[in-house]
Image (cartoon, rainbow, N blue to C red):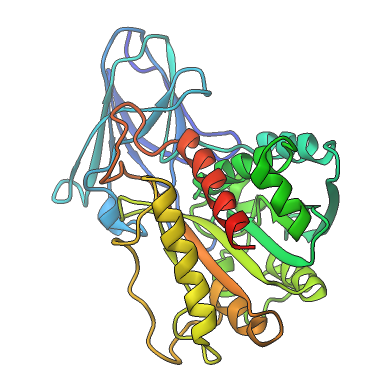
Amino acid sequence: MPITDINAAFDSGNIIVHAIDGNSATLGIRKDKDSEFAQWFHFRVACAAGEEIELRITGLEGSAYPGGWPDYRACVSEDRDFWGRADTSYDKAADGGTLTIRYTPASDIVWFAYFAPFSMERHHDLIADAATCEGVSYRCLGHSLEGQPIDCLSMGDGETQVWLYARQHPGETQAEYWMEGALDMLTDLSDPHTRVLLEKCRLHIVPNCNPDGSCRGHLRTNFAGVNLNREWAEPNLERSPEVLGIRNAMDETGVHWAMDVHGDEAIPAAFMAGFEGIPSWTDDQGARYNDFINRLAARTPDFQTELGYTKAGPGKANLTMSTNQLAERFGSSHKCVSMTLEMPYKDTVHGNDPYQGWSPERCRLLARECLATLAEMV
């Protein structure tokens, strides 16, 4: 039986079907609404168990990050719980850049995605589960342009204000799996690192900063086609109410430590980006940031400091980005150390898992190592 249907009409779905021919299909990726960004895909295929299918996603040299396709393997699942990797190749010269996915399903329906999806239903389950735990309080920091709540969970009795926030870029679903691991640890009162953090810190956690983009299957933008991580200098209700609500709440509490959690398309490793180049940079801030990333690298082989982004020169930091804005905004008052955690879509250079590559499970484990490192430092 040939492929009978390819569909993405669901939460975070994204695909364009150009043609189906037997067990092969030619596809494309829909751009984010009112934006030129395109990279995220998530769709299902109805086919025949035991017969190999071939899916060709074309036009990818015009995607947001064409450097993300070489050496990338697509995520695949038949139960939407365990996500493995499919046989995948990339030819930049074919049809404007073509990603070819080959897979032999064990059932008559199979799902594919750029990374394991994290649905809004799963998000609401995460919020509900954590909000019922001892010592956890909930508040809505505002609403998205389409009216979805910006959820925030807080816990701990200490004076050190810690903010953890994720999915400014909705297609970076690694970030909310990281949040699952963080909340699982922070609601486990038997964990000694958790007890230290809850004693020393007041933690504020925003698992999804961009629910509209998440629902719509966007890679990088909200309902208005706005990249939220370029709105932190002057957020407003018309373009970026999500950022405005979060930043206003941060102004109320102050920020000592902050981590913005992301995924990176091209670099095959987990790494951190700091706030080098902010106008008010101090060596003390820089020393504590470097201490954090070096301790984290020593704790887990899933984090490293060799691969990463180019650092901004003195006074050249982009203050529209949250990590730079927070370090600058709260540097003198709170000696703020802020950072951006990036996790890969590709398999990692070191310690790769041949079946899953970088996976939701590893995202959750890395969250625990990040929080344990923070517990050492506070």
